[in-house]
Image (cartoon, rainbow, N blue to C red; front, side, top):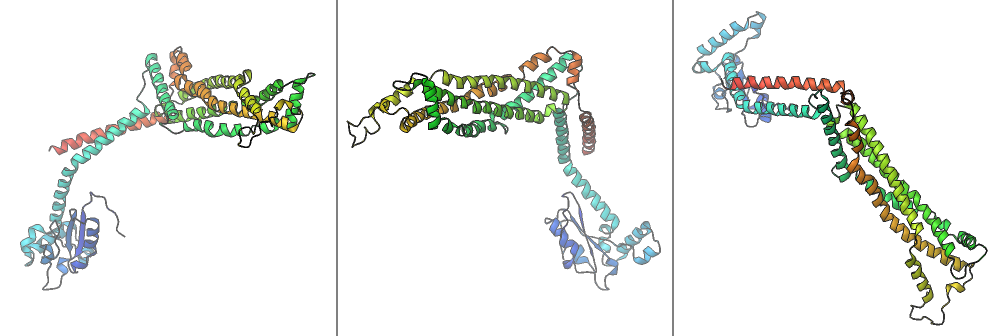
Length: 454
């Protein structure tokens, strides 16, 4: 498995001269990690150990295997030299003598040896560094910009006068308010949960209302009879109708108030998320708590007003019934259920008022009429309740969530404003560390600039 190398590495492909260069593992690996050969330097060792009558000139002069950079031959200390503790200075002197006196490599002596290899690599490294200086400076500048941005994100030091503190608090509140509105308007997730309350929760709750039990024949008979009192109705049991309708409409208060509470819960959650997602607020835990408390108080006021409004909507449906609905029913009854058919008998009309007022058909017709009217009211409330909730809660939360809080902090003393801006010690330490790193990077940039122009 090939070990990945950073792109800035110089590769020394070291191969023994007494082995076939075509099978060199070093060359093979170098080609894998540096296919273009821009970073690869070939080094031949053990030139002094080659068989008599053979040499490595084909490799060194690039005829056997050509590299972009010249091959360099070196002669290291033998095992005997190591055992005799021959130092590196003596070894380098011995290596230089070997190349200068060698009949095969004498003409290349000035380009052979460990000292020449070191100079060659140093010169190449200098060239590479100078080529990379613009990108290094660009990277340092980018890091400096990122550190400055991080300081801006976590906040610069705040002034100590009350005016600067009040300005900072207001700016932080506005930053929170922007995030909160983004949640409601769809820029951030969460606001869609309010729509789900209206599109799923409210319709499901309306479907579960016990109208079947309320409009059972037994209950219809009971309500109509009680509504008549001592004087039975003459034509239609109007009081019975009204009581059945009023009793049915009351059931709508439950789903209406549940919608108000569900939206209130969503708004509270969005406040919590918005505080957590407002980067500028993270350094001020006390102000976070104050904003959360003020927002919760405001949302509770909006909820109470919304609950009153949806309750009024339900009560209004009881206060004034839609007369046209029942007139239309009477007109249809007078025409008879079969009068529109092709085989209708014009003499078969039997007015509803002639039915037995305690008969099942008669009670069933009353239940059906009331149920039809309640379905109409249900559809009306299904459309009007979301409008009322949005108007009283969502709209007001967008417009005036922190209005009262703004008024209150405008009256605060300097000490209280300072307490609201009390920072987390960990954040203060982070700011100090970033400032130190920023200073180091700026110093490094200045040093590199001075070297680049030498």
